[in-house]
Amino acid sequence: MTDKKYQTFIFDLDDTLLDFKSAEQQALQLLFSDLKLKLDEPAKQAFSNFNQSLWKKLEKKQITREQLFEERFHTFFKNYYHLEINGNSCSDQYLSYLAYGHEEVDGARELLTDLFSAKKQLYLATNGVFKVQIQRLKDAKMAEFFEQVFVSEKIGSEKPDPEFFKYFFSHSNADPAQTLIVGDSLSSDILGGINAGIDTMWFNPERTTNFSQISPSYQIDSLSEVKKFA
Image (cartoon, rainbow, N blue to C red; front, side, top):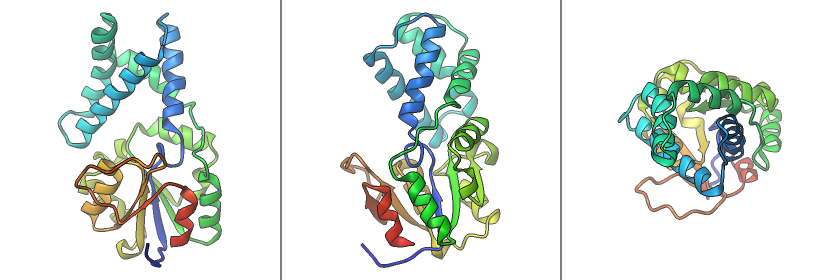
């Protein structure tokens, strides 16, 4: 690793600062209860995989945000349970439950506190639904750490689209040469940072092998390691 120091840190939210898997499980449990269905482990994993595949398609502009929200529940329940449900209304209910999920990733608050105390510029850049992400951030009492929060729904483009980062740099005081993006997704956070010409840090707590062609500037498995770059 290098001794390079950064003034500006861009953080992803889901599975970087807040535990999305926990929030997703909680939201699914409530939704399945509403539908009087049992949420077992295979169903949970099947939905998570399907949902992630749709978000990957959205990142690649293969589907629209509207198609994602309509399709993920309509298609999932049709294929998995042979049920016909209204995808949009089901999605709205799920999102209302998802907004309650704000369990922190280990070390997240300590890291943000230290960087904030060191007078570093902190920004949040997340793909997702604006009202859901803002509510989760507010409930986690993390919003005060960030100078600004950038959510793809409001910007009109998703990470890794260069337009997302073009918008970010035109609406912030960040200097690209002194900026580091930290996130758990190679295809979203890291590729997006590479496309934007900034240094990237892949947060990989599970120590997953990177089989992709996407090469982050740095790789960490604990958020505490970010402090070395401040």
